[in-house]
Picture 1 (cartoon, one colour):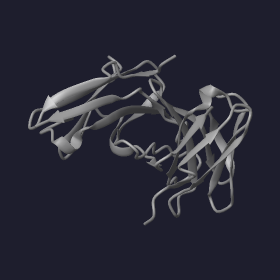
Picture 2: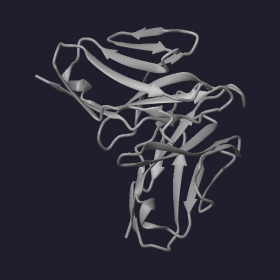
Picture 3: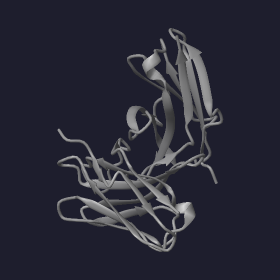
Length: 117
Length: 113
């Protein structure tokens, strides 16, 4: 069974540019979450999508957005990049039995390492 | 506002001994707690979890203890093995929060021969 796939794995952008990251969840998983990992901050929740609907959103500015497609694949976008956006962006998928289910057991991809110069 | 805290950034133990990783939380709404392990250049992998209705959960060499009154949980690894060397993240979720996890900043465990 293929795991969570994130592309690209590494990318370099300059301030002011925008970036789109992609995530393919484990087959059959309908929930996709995004996390930002920076040194000293641990993993911080960005948002979660389930059946193409955003279920939860973390405390990030509106420059961070996402979407989910009918095949459960997800993309996140960061516009007007800032130096502080340099981070590892992790996508995680989960098999939920319903919109109120709460397993918390996420399967993470290897991440997309974004460097903003 | 760090709602989940791992106050020890690093821990070093000898092979065969017990590793104890600690985690504190402040949000009383958290009702499910998890530990993830992360190797360099890989995504975190789920290790073990515990519901707030329990105070202990065991899985092989790994045991998680939850003290709700103290808002504290710990992960015990016995016996520790060199392959356990990794960063360990404590995480928590609240009922109805879906898959929104609040993570600690991690503890780097090094198991020495």
